[in-house]
Each structure stands twice: as structure tokens, then as C-alpha cells.
Image (cartoon, rainbow, N blue to C red; front, top):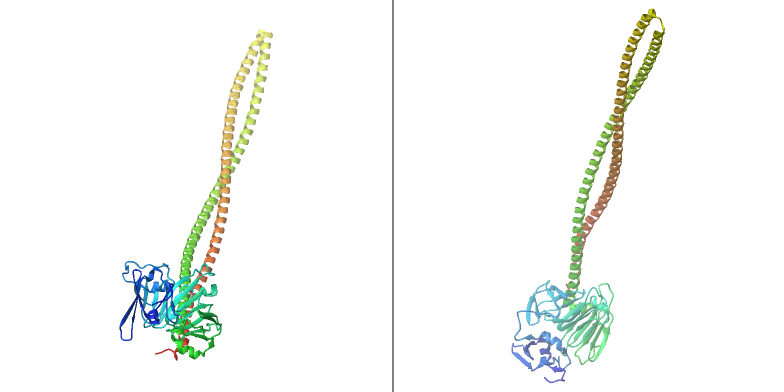
Length: 533
């Protein structure tokens, strides 16, 4: 077990088939021969520096991979720690349960379980296909062992990323994803003998024993295009650029052979199982993604449909409320119109009453004029009688005694007549007062009617203003109703579009299923001659 300070030499069987156990800083490697006899090699203080393990023919197992493969002899089973808490991929295809070494524990995983950084995948008796977050796919045949010790990918930053898959032993194939598009050799696949720098393509290969051929074949992409891969070891490198172009490497100490193009049938005879597993893994992942996207679209569409239904209900309620408000306003307008008509009738009655009072006032004024004329006549008659009485009194002083008696009788008659005239005058004055009082009463009634008429006019004006206000409110409500109806129509159209979207998504589901069925048929037809029963 000699070697340079940064390497330790071991056999290829120990490198590829050994069971690695860590005991403190020591590493033990146990292998079994064909008769089941165990042999253990102890590398003292190995984990102080973790040098690479190499074979005599140059096959290499990097120190960091040894650290991942080594199981602690006294593991802490209470907790399984991950360098990265997020899954990097998922087991998409698996013939049988898959044993994964995660830290110091061995876990049995099934199809659909997640894979994490530094998980050691042991295919044992069945093929395994893994789909990764960047849409790359890797599969290994039964008996192969693989570990992903580098995976950096963020969909939000698609221009950066890196990935390294270590195939320790066995047949493998892969289809590159988004990481390979970020730059040459951003994705690498490493075996103990060589490194593949991936530049966007499909590859099949075999990590074989020392001295036996480690073969790498470049495959065409689904669309017929061909990518490139750089095959490198410590002795040289070669670039594969054509479909089914292959190179072989017997040991790490020999450079890759000159590329040759193999017939497709030969390639499939060698690698049909792993190619088929990778192809199926990729298709399953694509189908799963499409189904997830379709399911998400359906959920979003159904949620949108529910929201639109709620919005429709709200709009219908709002429309009903507006219609009720409109009816109430129209009823209020009708009531105001009736009130206005009643006031107009009252106003007409008051006008008629006012006209009657005016006629009565005119009649009273005419009567007052007649009474005044009669009063003036009586006053003139009284004045004439008084003047005549004065003349008789003067004459009484001058006439002889024999004539006095006659004059006195005339004077008495005049005085009686004056008294009668005075009484008539008093009656006339009383009549004048009564007429004046009636006129005043009529004038007061006219004043009351005028005040009532003014009040009614004010009420009519208030009603008219209120009617105008209600009319404006009715117009506003009608405009709101129109807006709601237009919005309802718009929501109805959106609702129809969403329902069409749901139908499209359901058709999309059916199409996905049909596409996968077609793929299955084509898949079986393509590989049935080459896959072992």
C-alpha cells in the first residue's frame, strides 16, 4: 500500500467493490473473494489528510468521495445531516427498492423518493433513473454505484451552476440539463479512470475494471442534433462530436483511443438498458412537470372561477340593491308629485277664495262709498236745518210777539227734524264702522290667504327641488346599474374564458396521457430487441 504522500495505492477490487468503514482517523476497506472469504486492509490515520486512493493502473477515487463512502463504525443514528437541506433530484425510475447511503446510514428508497447532495446510490439488483432539478437525467444499471458530490443550480440565476456525478462502477447514461448550458464542463461525470466534460448532450458509458475497456459513446439528442463531450484522463483527452462516436480507455495511464463511429445496433446491444432507463426517466420527469403545471393551471383556473362566481353574486346583489333603490326613489318621486298636485289644488282653492274676498271687498267699498254719500247728504241736511234754525232764532228776536209762536213751532219742528237727522247720522256712522270692520276682516283674510299662498309656493319650490334631486339620484343609480351590468357582462365573459381554460387544461391532461402512451409504444418498439428479458 505504498504511494506518494497525497495518494495511497490499493487494488481495483478494493477501490470499486470495497466496504469502507471509518474508525476514528483510520479507514478499513473490506472485500470478498469468489468463495466469500473476507479480506480487510487498514489504512492508519487516513482521515487526517484524506489522500486519493489509486490503483496500479491509475484508477482514482478522490479523497472527498472516500469520505462520503466511508461509514463510521460508531454512527450517530439520532440525526442524519445533509450538506444541503434541499433535495437535488428524485428517483423517477426504479426496478427495485434502491439502497442509499446517507451520511452513516443506509436507507431504502422507492420510486418518487428524493435524492440529496452526497447520497451514495447503490443500484445493486435493479436499474435506477434519477431526474434532477435542472432537468438533467442520469441512470445506472444493476450493480452500479454513483454519488453526486457537487450540485449548484438556481432557476432564478440560470447562467450559473455546476454539477459532478461520480460513477464508481457500472454502466451509466445521462441526458444533460440546464447546468450544462451555463458553460463548457459546468456539468461533469467522473469515473475512477476518466472525466467527461459535458457540453449539452446525451452519453452512455461504462466504468469498468482496470485493464478492461471503459467505453464512452456520444448519443444524438431527441431532435437529431448532437452535442459534444470532452473525455479526459491524466494521459490525454479526446473530443466526441458525432452521433454514436465512441472512445475507450483501458487504464488511467493510457490516453483515450481515437474516436470511432459505432453502428447504432452495437451501441444498443451494449447500453440499451441504461439508455432506455435514462430516456424513460427524462420522459417521466417531463410528463410529471407537464402534469404539475397543468394541475397548477387547473387549480388557478378553478380558484379564478370561484372568485368570478363570488364576484358575479356580489354584482347581482349590488344590481338588486340598486334596482330597489331606484324603485324607492321612483316611489318617492311619485309621492312628491302627488303632494305637489295636492298643493296646486290648495293653491287654486286659495286663489278662488282670494278672488271671492276681493269681490266682497269691492262690494263693501262700494257700500262704504254709498254710505259715505248718504252720510254727506245727511250732514248737508243737518247743516241746512241748523242754518234754518239759526235764521228762525234770529227772526224770533226780531218778529212781533204774535208771530213768535208760529216761528217757535217751526223751530221745534226743525229741531225735531235735526234730532231725526242726527239719529240717521249715527246710524249711518255705525253702518260705516261696520262696513270698515268688514273691510278690515276681509283684508286680514286676504293677508292670511296671501301668506298661505306664499307658504304653498315655498313648499312647491322645495318639492320641485327635491324632485330634481331625486331625478338626479335616479340617473346616478341608472348609471351605476349600467356600470354593474357592463361589469357583470365582462365577468360573464371572463367566466366563459376560465371555463374554456379549464376544459383546455383537462384536454391537456388527456394529451399528456396520450403522448406518454405513444412514447411507451415507441419506447417498447425501439428497445425490445436489445433489452434482456
